[in-house]
Length: 108
Length: 111
View: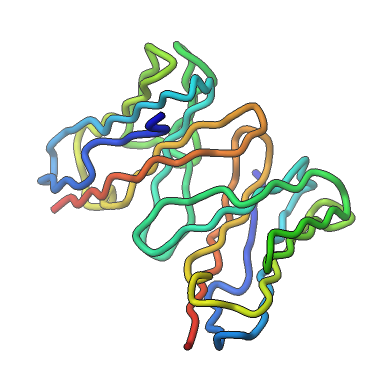
C-alpha cells in the first residue's frame, strides 16, 4: 500500500531561522495535503496541492509539490514561536495516508 | 456550526471493558473517519465511511467496530479494551475537496 514518509522527525529551530520539512511517497499522488497539529490539539488543514510542480504560499509558509507528484516540501521562513507543532503531510484522495509528521520546537 | 464533536474528551478503561466513542458532524459531509494517534506518531486510519450505511476497514481495524446509521453520526466501538488501545482517537469528516476536518479527540487510557 501507499506509504508517506516525512523527514526530519524533529526540527529544533532558532527563532528567526528558516527550515524545510520533506514528504516522500512510494507511489504517485493525485494530491497532497498538509496539516498542522499544535501540542495537545487536533490536526488542522493548511493546504492542498494538486498539480505537478505546484507552489503555494501562505504568509511565511511555502508549499511545493514535486514534478513527479511523489514528494512535497514545506518551507517556513523566519520561524516564530507560533510555528510550534507537528506538521503532517497526507495523500491521496478521500482515504488519506498520513506521514508520521515533523515536530517543530522553537528556541527563543 | 459546531463542526465535528467528540465525546467523551477523556476516558480510563479497565482491561476487558467496552465503550463507545461518539462522533457527530453538522457539516453534511458524506465521508467520515476514525484515526488513532499514539504518542509521537502519525495518524493511523481505523475505519471510514463514505455514506450512511457504508463502512470499511482502514489500516488498523482489529479490536474496533463502527456503524453509520445517519449522515451525522459515526460511533466507534471498543468491545474488549486492551492496553494496546491506549491512544488518542480522532474523528474526521471530508468535504468534496478532500480537506479533512478533525474533532478535538478522545484521550483513552486502558489499564
